[in-house]
Length: 200
Image (cartoon, rainbow, N blue to C red; front, side, top):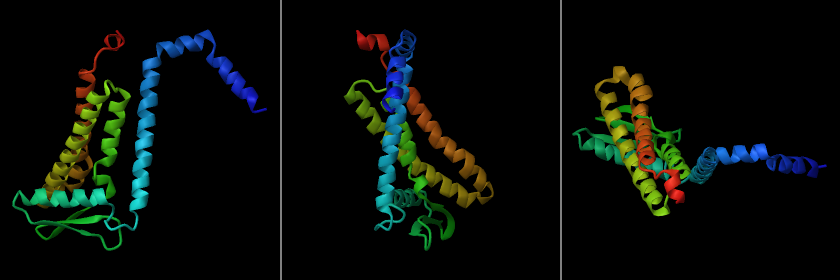
């Protein structure tokens, strides 16, 4: 009974109409397969890392802890006293500027999810492996650095202008990091070789 639907599916795939559609939309289907496939794989690996990080030596996990500590170091270069401490009951880092508790840094603040999104898009439009790998590495490092700067500026703005907290945290600074991802995507797509030239 199970073989019948499989045979029907194989038969449908062999029809001239479907073969023409697959041929016509092959680049789109290839992009979707590579994008969602790499996104799901990288997300699963990251999810595994987070699972293994539970009850580990770092709160909430090593990368988030590192981002929190690096952000405080950058904040201090602007002549503010900054420090982070693990939250007593939650998997977050409490951020203080000049002794004022401003915010908590959670796993979602570490830029890894954003970097995964960036990587998946570039992999979906991959060209020569060396060129792609270099762009992936440079882009990931750039986004990581931009995120540190984003947290730094957000912390200082929250300290100086607490009345704008929801607007700054909810709109301005998420827009900044997603805007950087979009610009990197544009940069990658603009320097791709035309498909015809790649197959010559």
